[in-house]
Amino acid sequence: MARDYPTLPRVGVGVVLLRGDAVLLIRRGRPPRLGEWSLPGGAQELGETVEEAARRELAEEVGLAPSGRLVLLDVIDSIQRDPDGRVRFHWTLIDFAAEAGPGEPVPGDDCAGAAWVPLADALADPALWRRTREVIQRASRLPRPIG
Image 1 (cartoon, rainbow, N blue to C red):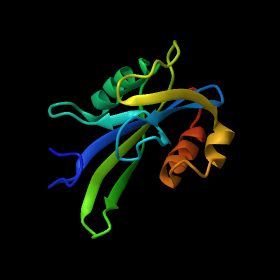
Image 2: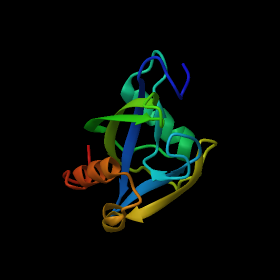
Image 3: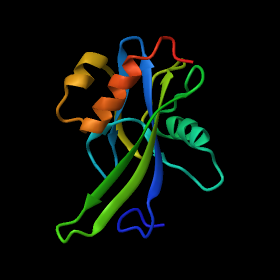
């Protein structure tokens, strides 16, 4: 299915990956939100659960895995329209929280960069999409370690 101007919504997964008092952010390497900082994640594939998709996307985008289980945070609709009002992108985003396993992020092909960002900085950054800041805030309030 086409990423832009789809005939049906697409399902995407994201992970608020935490390590200490920091969250992992990636710079998006393609639309939507090309060049913006966001959570690691991507599209669910046919035949995989959303949790399998989240784990696969973490591995593909940054070469990391969670140290334990994933905790469901939120389901968000991201609908972007073009100037004519047509739906250009429509994603149903399912966000999880997790503690990071060992290792450092290595950006994959969909990812133009990755960085551990202090939670306070991420939560205060107006350049991050408001809904991204909201799920980071929700994850930061979970008992630690997560899982």
